Amino acid sequence: MPDSFKPGQKINLTIKAEPRRERDIDTLQRLMRFDPDHNRTLKKAQEHRMKTLVVRSRGKRPWAVRRRSARVVLPHTGASWSMQYFPHIAPDIKAVERFLEITPA
Image 1 (cartoon, rainbow, N blue to C red):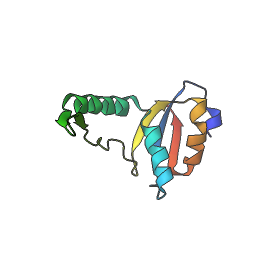
Image 2: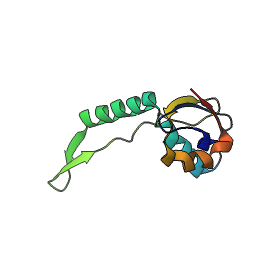
Image 3: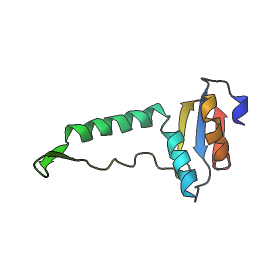
């Protein structure tokens, strides 16, 4: 299926079944981060974490206490996003194709 799309073409993806394996979940999260809205949200959260970074003294040196990042992209049934198709992500899409419904935008 991914072979039928052209590079740069917009595609819509919808999760039709939740994966159980950790590597499939990670692959879906990586694909979901290509959505401009998700990417923007993650970037703003990262900027906020850096703005509110607490620097403490540890061993008489500055030590940054970093907060864990928020889990913004969670692959659950019915989650949908749109992204541009690129040939280098074709193996990722093929690996989790059984969990996805892929349509051209």
